[in-house]
Image (tube, rainbow over all chains, first blue to last red; front, side):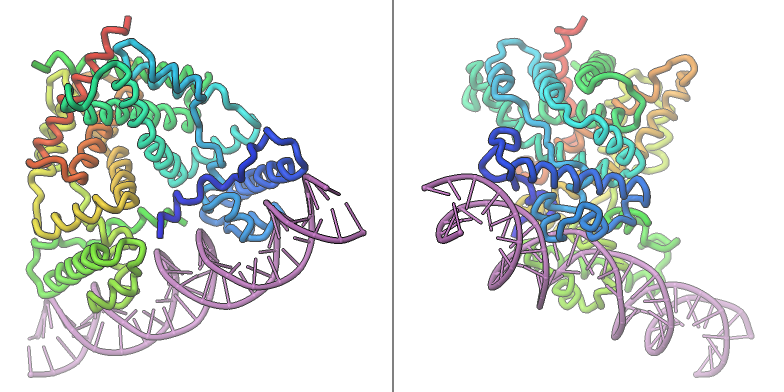
Length: 227
Length: 227
DNA sequence: GCGCATCGGTGCAGCTACTGTATTTTTGTC
DNA sequence: GACAAAAATACAGTAGCTGCACCGATGCGC
Protein backbone atom coordinates (compact mmCIF):
# COMPACT_ATOMS: atom_id res chain seq x y z
CA UNK A 1 0.00 0.00 0.00
CA UNK A 2 2.73 2.47 0.91
CA UNK A 3 6.03 3.53 -0.63
CA UNK A 4 8.51 0.70 -0.67
CA UNK A 5 11.52 2.92 -0.47
CA UNK A 6 10.68 4.77 2.69
CA UNK A 7 8.33 2.46 4.54
CA UNK A 8 11.22 0.38 5.83
CA UNK A 9 12.18 2.82 8.58
CA UNK A 10 11.34 2.34 12.19
CA UNK A 11 12.18 -1.33 12.30
CA UNK A 12 13.70 -1.39 15.74
CA UNK A 13 11.71 -2.98 18.55
CA UNK A 14 10.73 -1.31 21.79
CA UNK A 15 14.13 -1.32 23.47
CA UNK A 16 16.85 1.09 22.27
CA UNK A 17 20.05 -0.39 20.85
CA UNK A 18 22.31 0.58 23.74
CA UNK A 19 19.68 0.91 26.47
CA UNK A 20 19.02 -2.66 27.53
CA UNK A 21 22.23 -4.67 27.47
CA UNK A 22 20.75 -8.06 26.72
CA UNK A 23 22.42 -10.52 24.45
CA UNK A 24 19.62 -9.87 22.01
CA UNK A 25 20.42 -6.19 21.62
CA UNK A 26 24.09 -6.90 21.15
CA UNK A 27 23.46 -9.53 18.52
CA UNK A 28 21.11 -7.21 16.76
CA UNK A 29 23.66 -4.43 16.61
CA UNK A 30 26.24 -6.91 15.39
CA UNK A 31 24.01 -8.10 12.58
CA UNK A 32 23.17 -4.57 11.53
CA UNK A 33 26.82 -3.65 11.50
CA UNK A 34 27.77 -6.80 9.62
CA UNK A 35 25.19 -6.05 6.96
CA UNK A 36 26.27 -2.46 6.48
CA UNK A 37 29.96 -3.35 6.42
CA UNK A 38 29.44 -6.17 3.97
CA UNK A 39 27.33 -3.97 1.71
CA UNK A 40 29.85 -1.14 1.61
CA UNK A 41 32.81 -3.46 1.18
CA UNK A 42 31.20 -5.33 -1.68
CA UNK A 43 30.11 -2.14 -3.42
CA UNK A 44 33.58 -0.63 -3.15
CA UNK A 45 34.95 -3.76 -4.75
CA UNK A 46 32.40 -4.51 -7.47
CA UNK A 47 30.43 -1.31 -7.90
CA UNK A 48 26.98 -0.64 -6.50
CA UNK A 49 24.99 -1.95 -9.45
CA UNK A 50 26.86 -5.22 -9.53
CA UNK A 51 26.13 -6.06 -5.91
CA UNK A 52 22.97 -8.06 -5.23
CA UNK A 53 21.14 -8.43 -1.98
CA UNK A 54 21.99 -12.12 -2.01
CA UNK A 55 25.69 -11.34 -2.14
CA UNK A 56 25.40 -9.13 0.91
CA UNK A 57 23.42 -11.80 2.72
CA UNK A 58 26.00 -14.44 2.00
CA UNK A 59 28.81 -12.20 3.21
CA UNK A 60 26.92 -11.28 6.38
CA UNK A 61 25.56 -14.80 6.86
CA UNK A 62 21.90 -13.95 7.14
CA UNK A 63 18.89 -14.89 5.04
CA UNK A 64 17.58 -12.45 2.42
CA UNK A 65 14.40 -12.11 4.43
CA UNK A 66 16.37 -10.99 7.43
CA UNK A 67 18.23 -8.51 5.29
CA UNK A 68 15.00 -6.75 4.48
CA UNK A 69 13.86 -6.93 8.07
CA UNK A 70 16.93 -4.94 9.02
CA UNK A 71 17.55 -2.63 6.10
CA UNK A 72 14.13 -2.33 4.53
CA UNK A 73 15.67 -1.59 1.16
CA UNK A 74 18.79 -2.49 -0.72
CA UNK A 75 19.77 1.16 -0.56
CA UNK A 76 19.23 1.14 3.17
CA UNK A 77 22.14 -1.20 3.67
CA UNK A 78 24.52 1.22 2.01
CA UNK A 79 23.23 4.43 3.52
CA UNK A 80 23.04 2.99 7.01
CA UNK A 81 20.11 2.94 9.40
CA UNK A 82 20.91 6.22 11.08
CA UNK A 83 18.78 9.21 10.21
CA UNK A 84 20.33 12.12 12.15
CA UNK A 85 17.91 12.95 14.94
CA UNK A 86 17.92 16.08 17.10
CA UNK A 87 17.97 15.72 20.87
CA UNK A 88 14.91 16.60 22.88
CA UNK A 89 16.92 19.29 24.63
CA UNK A 90 18.04 20.80 21.32
CA UNK A 91 14.47 20.59 20.13
CA UNK A 92 13.20 22.61 23.09
CA UNK A 93 16.07 25.08 22.81
CA UNK A 94 15.15 25.74 19.20
CA UNK A 95 11.43 26.03 19.71
CA UNK A 96 11.80 28.52 22.53
CA UNK A 97 14.62 30.49 20.98
CA UNK A 98 13.77 34.18 20.93
CA UNK A 99 16.12 35.42 18.19
CA UNK A 100 15.06 36.59 14.75
CA UNK A 101 17.41 34.28 12.93
CA UNK A 102 15.19 31.22 12.64
CA UNK A 103 17.15 29.81 9.75
CA UNK A 104 20.47 30.12 11.53
CA UNK A 105 19.10 28.51 14.66
CA UNK A 106 17.57 25.69 12.67
CA UNK A 107 20.82 24.91 10.92
CA UNK A 108 22.56 25.18 14.25
CA UNK A 109 20.27 22.58 15.74
CA UNK A 110 20.92 20.20 12.89
CA UNK A 111 24.64 20.76 13.21
CA UNK A 112 24.43 19.91 16.91
CA UNK A 113 22.53 16.74 16.09
CA UNK A 114 25.27 15.68 13.70
CA UNK A 115 27.97 16.41 16.24
CA UNK A 116 26.45 14.11 18.87
CA UNK A 117 26.52 11.23 16.60
CA UNK A 118 29.75 9.64 15.43
CA UNK A 119 29.85 5.85 15.64
CA UNK A 120 32.38 3.81 13.77
CA UNK A 121 34.63 6.28 11.99
CA UNK A 122 36.04 3.67 9.67
CA UNK A 123 32.68 2.62 8.25
CA UNK A 124 31.80 6.27 7.83
CA UNK A 125 34.94 6.91 5.83
CA UNK A 126 34.36 3.97 3.54
CA UNK A 127 30.73 4.92 3.09
CA UNK A 128 31.76 8.42 2.09
CA UNK A 129 34.08 6.96 -0.51
CA UNK A 130 31.31 4.80 -1.88
CA UNK A 131 28.75 7.56 -2.13
CA UNK A 132 31.36 9.78 -3.74
CA UNK A 133 31.53 7.41 -6.68
CA UNK A 134 27.87 6.39 -6.74
CA UNK A 135 25.59 9.29 -7.64
CA UNK A 136 22.40 7.31 -7.22
CA UNK A 137 23.17 6.89 -3.54
CA UNK A 138 23.66 10.63 -3.27
CA UNK A 139 20.14 10.97 -4.62
CA UNK A 140 18.94 8.55 -1.99
CA UNK A 141 20.47 10.59 0.80
CA UNK A 142 18.80 13.65 -0.66
CA UNK A 143 15.43 11.95 -0.45
CA UNK A 144 16.05 11.24 3.20
CA UNK A 145 16.57 14.92 3.79
CA UNK A 146 13.27 15.57 2.05
CA UNK A 147 11.66 13.18 4.51
CA UNK A 148 13.23 15.02 7.40
CA UNK A 149 11.97 18.34 6.10
CA UNK A 150 8.36 17.44 6.71
CA UNK A 151 9.16 17.16 10.39
CA UNK A 152 11.13 20.39 10.44
CA UNK A 153 8.18 22.39 9.16
CA UNK A 154 6.30 21.45 12.29
CA UNK A 155 9.24 22.46 14.43
CA UNK A 156 9.49 25.87 12.84
CA UNK A 157 5.76 26.41 13.21
CA UNK A 158 6.01 25.48 16.87
CA UNK A 159 8.64 28.15 17.31
CA UNK A 160 6.53 30.70 15.50
CA UNK A 161 3.63 29.89 17.76
CA UNK A 162 5.84 30.19 20.83
CA UNK A 163 6.68 33.67 19.58
CA UNK A 164 3.03 34.55 19.40
CA UNK A 165 2.76 34.40 15.64
CA UNK A 166 -0.26 32.43 14.49
CA UNK A 167 -1.95 31.65 11.21
CA UNK A 168 -4.62 34.12 12.31
CA UNK A 169 -2.38 37.15 12.63
CA UNK A 170 0.07 36.15 9.90
CA UNK A 171 -1.65 34.68 6.87
CA UNK A 172 1.54 33.54 5.20
CA UNK A 173 2.93 31.83 8.29
CA UNK A 174 2.91 28.29 6.91
CA UNK A 175 4.47 29.45 3.67
CA UNK A 176 7.18 31.21 5.60
CA UNK A 177 7.90 28.11 7.67
CA UNK A 178 8.10 26.00 4.55
CA UNK A 179 10.49 28.46 2.97
CA UNK A 180 12.72 28.51 6.02
CA UNK A 181 12.87 24.74 5.91
CA UNK A 182 13.46 24.72 2.16
CA UNK A 183 16.42 27.01 2.66
CA UNK A 184 17.75 24.89 5.50
CA UNK A 185 17.39 21.97 3.10
CA UNK A 186 19.51 23.81 0.58
CA UNK A 187 22.22 24.30 3.13
CA UNK A 188 22.06 20.65 4.12
CA UNK A 189 22.13 19.40 0.56
CA UNK A 190 24.96 21.70 -0.35
CA UNK A 191 26.92 20.61 2.69
CA UNK A 192 26.23 16.96 2.06
CA UNK A 193 27.39 17.27 -1.51
CA UNK A 194 30.59 18.95 -0.46
CA UNK A 195 31.11 16.48 2.33
CA UNK A 196 30.74 13.46 0.10
CA UNK A 197 32.95 15.02 -2.56
CA UNK A 198 35.76 14.78 -0.05
CA UNK A 199 36.68 18.43 -0.61
CA UNK A 200 36.34 19.38 3.03
CA UNK A 201 38.46 18.59 6.06
CA UNK A 202 36.66 19.37 9.26
CA UNK A 203 33.62 18.47 11.29
CA UNK A 204 30.18 18.28 9.71
CA UNK A 205 29.01 20.98 12.09
CA UNK A 206 31.71 23.36 10.90
CA UNK A 207 30.84 22.61 7.31
CA UNK A 208 27.20 23.45 7.95
CA UNK A 209 28.18 26.76 9.51
CA UNK A 210 30.43 27.62 6.58
CA UNK A 211 27.66 26.77 4.16
CA UNK A 212 25.23 28.97 6.03
CA UNK A 213 27.67 31.85 5.84
CA UNK A 214 28.15 31.33 2.12
CA UNK A 215 24.41 31.27 1.65
CA UNK A 216 24.02 34.57 3.43
CA UNK A 217 26.73 36.10 1.26
CA UNK A 218 25.03 34.91 -1.92
CA UNK A 219 21.57 36.04 -0.92
CA UNK A 220 22.91 39.35 0.35
CA UNK A 221 24.36 40.00 -3.11
CA UNK A 222 20.96 39.36 -4.62
CA UNK A 223 18.89 41.24 -2.04
CA UNK A 224 19.67 44.88 -3.08
CA UNK A 225 17.64 44.32 -6.23
CA UNK A 226 14.52 43.89 -4.07
CA UNK A 227 12.14 46.74 -3.41
CA UNK B 1 25.66 -0.52 -15.39
CA UNK B 2 23.88 2.78 -14.85
CA UNK B 3 21.02 3.98 -12.67
CA UNK B 4 17.77 2.37 -13.69
CA UNK B 5 15.61 5.23 -12.54
CA UNK B 6 17.23 8.01 -14.49
CA UNK B 7 18.83 6.24 -17.42
CA UNK B 8 15.49 6.11 -19.17
CA UNK B 9 15.59 9.75 -20.25
CA UNK B 10 16.47 10.83 -23.71
CA UNK B 11 14.51 8.15 -25.46
CA UNK B 12 13.28 10.38 -28.25
CA UNK B 13 14.97 9.99 -31.60
CA UNK B 14 16.66 12.79 -33.54
CA UNK B 15 13.56 14.55 -34.86
CA UNK B 16 11.44 16.61 -32.48
CA UNK B 17 7.85 15.48 -31.83
CA UNK B 18 6.25 18.22 -33.89
CA UNK B 19 9.11 18.98 -36.25
CA UNK B 20 8.92 16.23 -38.83
CA UNK B 21 5.33 15.38 -39.61
CA UNK B 22 5.77 11.78 -40.65
CA UNK B 23 3.21 9.19 -39.73
CA UNK B 24 5.83 7.68 -37.47
CA UNK B 25 6.22 10.79 -35.38
CA UNK B 26 2.48 11.18 -35.03
CA UNK B 27 2.01 7.58 -33.99
CA UNK B 28 4.78 7.98 -31.51
CA UNK B 29 3.25 11.04 -29.93
CA UNK B 30 -0.10 9.28 -29.82
CA UNK B 31 1.35 6.28 -28.00
CA UNK B 32 3.19 8.46 -25.50
CA UNK B 33 0.07 10.42 -24.82
CA UNK B 34 -2.03 7.28 -24.52
CA UNK B 35 0.39 5.82 -21.99
CA UNK B 36 0.50 8.93 -19.85
CA UNK B 37 -3.25 9.38 -19.94
CA UNK B 38 -3.90 5.76 -19.11
CA UNK B 39 -1.41 5.85 -16.26
CA UNK B 40 -2.85 8.97 -14.67
CA UNK B 41 -6.43 7.86 -15.15
CA UNK B 42 -5.81 4.46 -13.59
CA UNK B 43 -3.90 5.92 -10.67
CA UNK B 44 -6.64 8.44 -9.96
CA UNK B 45 -9.12 5.61 -9.89
CA UNK B 46 -7.23 2.88 -8.03
CA UNK B 47 -4.34 4.66 -6.32
CA UNK B 48 -0.75 4.70 -7.50
CA UNK B 49 0.40 1.59 -5.66
CA UNK B 50 -2.44 -0.51 -6.96
CA UNK B 51 -1.70 0.24 -10.59
CA UNK B 52 0.64 -2.15 -12.34
CA UNK B 53 2.55 -1.61 -15.55
CA UNK B 54 0.54 -4.37 -17.12
CA UNK B 55 -2.69 -2.53 -16.37
CA UNK B 56 -1.39 0.58 -18.07
CA UNK B 57 -0.27 -1.45 -21.05
CA UNK B 58 -3.63 -3.07 -21.42
CA UNK B 59 -5.40 0.28 -21.26
CA UNK B 60 -3.03 1.85 -23.76
CA UNK B 61 -2.89 -1.26 -25.92
CA UNK B 62 0.85 -1.67 -26.07
CA UNK B 63 3.15 -4.43 -24.88
CA UNK B 64 4.95 -4.09 -21.55
CA UNK B 65 8.23 -4.00 -23.42
CA UNK B 66 7.05 -1.00 -25.38
CA UNK B 67 5.94 0.68 -22.20
CA UNK B 68 9.48 0.69 -20.91
CA UNK B 69 10.82 1.79 -24.27
CA UNK B 70 8.68 4.88 -23.93
CA UNK B 71 8.61 5.66 -20.24
CA UNK B 72 11.80 4.05 -19.00
CA UNK B 73 10.28 3.63 -15.58
CA UNK B 74 6.88 3.07 -14.08
CA UNK B 75 7.18 6.48 -12.45
CA UNK B 76 8.04 7.99 -15.80
CA UNK B 77 4.56 7.27 -17.11
CA UNK B 78 2.97 9.30 -14.32
CA UNK B 79 5.40 12.20 -14.30
CA UNK B 80 5.41 12.57 -18.06
CA UNK B 81 8.32 12.71 -20.44
CA UNK B 82 8.81 16.45 -20.31
CA UNK B 83 11.83 17.79 -18.47
CA UNK B 84 11.45 21.59 -18.60
CA UNK B 85 14.25 22.82 -20.83
CA UNK B 86 15.40 26.44 -21.26
CA UNK B 87 15.55 27.91 -24.75
CA UNK B 88 18.90 28.59 -26.36
CA UNK B 89 18.04 32.27 -26.46
CA UNK B 90 17.20 32.31 -22.75
CA UNK B 91 20.41 30.41 -22.09
CA UNK B 92 22.51 33.05 -23.85
CA UNK B 93 20.61 35.88 -22.20
CA UNK B 94 21.37 34.43 -18.80
CA UNK B 95 25.03 33.69 -19.43
CA UNK B 96 25.73 37.16 -20.72
CA UNK B 97 23.60 38.99 -18.20
CA UNK B 98 25.60 41.69 -16.48
CA UNK B 99 23.58 42.19 -13.30
CA UNK B 100 24.67 41.21 -9.82
CA UNK B 101 21.53 39.21 -9.09
CA UNK B 102 22.59 35.84 -10.48
CA UNK B 103 20.05 33.98 -8.43
CA UNK B 104 17.18 36.15 -9.57
CA UNK B 105 18.20 35.87 -13.19
CA UNK B 106 18.55 32.12 -12.91
CA UNK B 107 15.09 31.71 -11.46
CA UNK B 108 13.80 34.08 -14.11
CA UNK B 109 15.24 31.90 -16.84
CA UNK B 110 13.60 28.82 -15.39
CA UNK B 111 10.31 30.65 -15.09
CA UNK B 112 10.53 31.62 -18.75
CA UNK B 113 11.22 28.01 -19.70
CA UNK B 114 8.10 26.91 -17.84
CA UNK B 115 6.01 29.59 -19.50
CA UNK B 116 6.89 28.42 -23.02
CA UNK B 117 5.71 25.00 -22.38
CA UNK B 118 2.05 24.20 -21.86
CA UNK B 119 0.77 21.18 -23.79
CA UNK B 120 -2.45 19.47 -22.92
CA UNK B 121 -3.92 21.43 -20.05
CA UNK B 122 -6.31 18.68 -19.11
CA UNK B 123 -3.65 16.05 -18.60
CA UNK B 124 -1.66 18.55 -16.61
CA UNK B 125 -4.58 19.22 -14.30
CA UNK B 126 -5.21 15.56 -13.68
CA UNK B 127 -1.54 14.93 -13.11
CA UNK B 128 -1.45 17.69 -10.53
CA UNK B 129 -4.35 16.07 -8.75
CA UNK B 130 -2.60 12.74 -8.74
CA UNK B 131 0.70 14.04 -7.43
CA UNK B 132 -1.15 15.99 -4.78
CA UNK B 133 -2.39 12.74 -3.27
CA UNK B 134 0.73 10.67 -3.97
CA UNK B 135 3.75 11.93 -2.02
CA UNK B 136 6.14 9.41 -3.53
CA UNK B 137 5.62 10.97 -6.93
CA UNK B 138 6.45 14.33 -5.44
CA UNK B 139 9.75 12.83 -4.36
CA UNK B 140 10.31 11.63 -7.90
CA UNK B 141 9.79 15.10 -9.28
CA UNK B 142 12.26 16.38 -6.73
CA UNK B 143 14.87 13.98 -8.00
CA UNK B 144 14.40 15.31 -11.48
CA UNK B 145 15.18 18.77 -10.23
CA UNK B 146 18.36 17.41 -8.71
CA UNK B 147 19.28 16.09 -12.14
CA UNK B 148 18.65 19.49 -13.65
CA UNK B 149 20.84 21.17 -11.06
CA UNK B 150 23.98 19.52 -12.35
CA UNK B 151 23.44 21.29 -15.63
CA UNK B 152 22.66 24.62 -13.98
CA UNK B 153 25.99 24.70 -12.17
CA UNK B 154 27.71 24.76 -15.52
CA UNK B 155 25.45 27.58 -16.66
CA UNK B 156 26.22 29.70 -13.64
CA UNK B 157 29.92 29.10 -14.03
CA UNK B 158 29.69 30.14 -17.66
CA UNK B 159 28.15 33.40 -16.57
CA UNK B 160 30.81 33.94 -13.95
CA UNK B 161 33.46 33.39 -16.56
CA UNK B 162 31.75 35.81 -18.93
CA UNK B 163 31.97 38.34 -16.12
CA UNK B 164 35.71 37.79 -15.87
CA UNK B 165 35.58 35.79 -12.67
CA UNK B 166 37.68 32.65 -12.85
CA UNK B 167 38.74 29.93 -10.46
CA UNK B 168 42.16 31.59 -10.47
CA UNK B 169 41.05 34.97 -9.15
CA UNK B 170 38.18 33.65 -7.02
CA UNK B 171 39.08 30.44 -5.18
CA UNK B 172 35.54 29.78 -3.99
CA UNK B 173 33.96 30.30 -7.39
CA UNK B 174 32.70 26.75 -7.86
CA UNK B 175 31.34 26.68 -4.34
CA UNK B 176 29.52 29.91 -4.97
CA UNK B 177 28.01 28.57 -8.18
CA UNK B 178 26.85 25.45 -6.42
CA UNK B 179 25.29 27.50 -3.69
CA UNK B 180 23.46 29.70 -6.15
CA UNK B 181 22.08 26.60 -7.81
CA UNK B 182 21.19 25.04 -4.47
CA UNK B 183 19.19 28.13 -3.60
CA UNK B 184 17.50 28.15 -6.96
CA UNK B 185 16.68 24.51 -6.28
CA UNK B 186 15.06 25.54 -3.01
CA UNK B 187 12.87 28.02 -4.79
CA UNK B 188 11.92 25.43 -7.39
CA UNK B 189 11.15 22.75 -4.83
CA UNK B 190 9.17 25.14 -2.71
CA UNK B 191 7.21 26.31 -5.73
CA UNK B 192 6.61 22.79 -6.92
CA UNK B 193 5.32 21.77 -3.55
CA UNK B 194 2.98 24.70 -3.42
CA UNK B 195 1.91 24.15 -6.99
CA UNK B 196 1.04 20.52 -6.44
CA UNK B 197 -0.72 21.29 -3.19
CA UNK B 198 -3.25 23.18 -5.27
CA UNK B 199 -2.94 26.23 -3.01
CA UNK B 200 -2.02 28.57 -5.83
CA UNK B 201 -4.00 30.02 -8.67
CA UNK B 202 -1.80 31.57 -11.30
CA UNK B 203 0.93 30.79 -13.73
CA UNK B 204 3.97 28.75 -12.69
CA UNK B 205 6.17 31.69 -13.63
CA UNK B 206 4.31 33.98 -11.25
CA UNK B 207 4.59 31.39 -8.51
CA UNK B 208 8.34 31.18 -8.98
CA UNK B 209 8.64 34.94 -8.73
CA UNK B 210 6.55 35.03 -5.57
CA UNK B 211 8.68 32.29 -4.07
CA UNK B 212 11.85 34.18 -4.88
CA UNK B 213 10.48 37.25 -3.16
CA UNK B 214 9.54 35.25 -0.10
CA UNK B 215 13.00 33.76 -0.01
CA UNK B 216 14.59 37.17 -0.08
CA UNK B 217 12.35 38.30 2.75
CA UNK B 218 13.29 35.30 4.87
CA UNK B 219 17.00 35.57 4.24
CA UNK B 220 16.93 39.31 4.79
CA UNK B 221 15.47 38.71 8.23
CA UNK B 222 18.33 36.37 9.01
CA UNK B 223 21.10 38.43 7.46
CA UNK B 224 21.43 41.23 10.09
CA UNK B 225 22.82 38.66 12.50
CA UNK B 226 25.84 38.21 10.23
CA UNK B 227 29.03 40.15 10.73
C1' DG C 1 3.00 0.65 -57.31
C1' DC C 2 7.54 -2.04 -55.75
C1' DG C 3 11.45 -3.64 -53.50
C1' DC C 4 14.57 -2.49 -49.98
C1' DA C 5 16.75 -0.69 -45.78
C1' DT C 6 15.49 0.84 -41.40
C1' DC C 7 13.03 1.48 -37.41
C1' DG C 8 9.78 0.50 -34.04
C1' DG C 9 6.83 -2.96 -31.56
C1' DT C 10 6.58 -7.47 -29.52
C1' DG C 11 7.32 -12.05 -27.34
C1' DC C 12 10.15 -14.41 -24.46
C1' DA C 13 13.29 -15.68 -21.03
C1' DG C 14 15.35 -14.17 -17.09
C1' DC C 15 17.15 -11.35 -13.14
C1' DT C 16 16.48 -8.90 -8.97
C1' DA C 17 14.13 -6.34 -5.41
C1' DC C 18 10.64 -6.94 -2.24
C1' DT C 19 6.55 -9.06 0.62
C1' DG C 20 3.33 -12.25 3.29
C1' DT C 21 3.04 -16.32 5.83
C1' DA C 22 4.00 -20.42 8.14
C1' DT C 23 7.77 -22.78 10.52
C1' DT C 24 11.81 -23.39 13.05
C1' DT C 25 15.46 -21.64 16.01
C1' DT C 26 17.09 -18.67 19.62
C1' DT C 27 16.73 -15.93 23.90
C1' DG C 28 14.96 -14.33 28.34
C1' DT C 29 12.43 -15.88 32.47
C1' DC C 30 10.62 -18.71 36.15
C1' DG D 1 14.76 -27.56 32.22
C1' DA D 2 10.01 -25.84 30.69
C1' DC D 3 7.73 -22.25 28.54
C1' DA D 4 6.55 -17.82 26.22
C1' DA D 5 8.25 -14.14 23.36
C1' DA D 6 10.94 -12.77 19.65
C1' DA D 7 13.87 -13.26 15.97
C1' DA D 8 15.64 -15.82 11.83
C1' DT D 9 14.44 -18.62 8.05
C1' DA D 10 12.33 -21.17 4.11
C1' DC D 11 9.14 -20.83 0.65
C1' DA D 12 6.30 -19.08 -2.76
C1' DG D 13 4.82 -15.39 -5.22
C1' DT D 14 4.51 -10.51 -7.36
C1' DA D 15 6.23 -6.78 -9.99
C1' DG D 16 9.63 -3.79 -12.13
C1' DC D 17 13.00 -3.91 -15.53
C1' DT D 18 16.40 -5.65 -19.31
C1' DG D 19 18.63 -7.97 -23.37
C1' DC D 20 17.76 -10.25 -27.46
C1' DA D 21 15.91 -11.99 -31.51
C1' DC D 22 12.13 -11.66 -34.53
C1' DC D 23 8.71 -9.57 -37.44
C1' DG D 24 5.69 -6.25 -39.24
C1' DA D 25 5.25 -1.33 -40.47
C1' DT D 26 7.22 2.76 -42.48
C1' DG D 27 9.80 5.70 -45.42
C1' DC D 28 12.17 6.12 -49.79
C1' DG D 29 14.26 5.75 -54.29
C1' DC D 30 12.78 3.93 -58.49
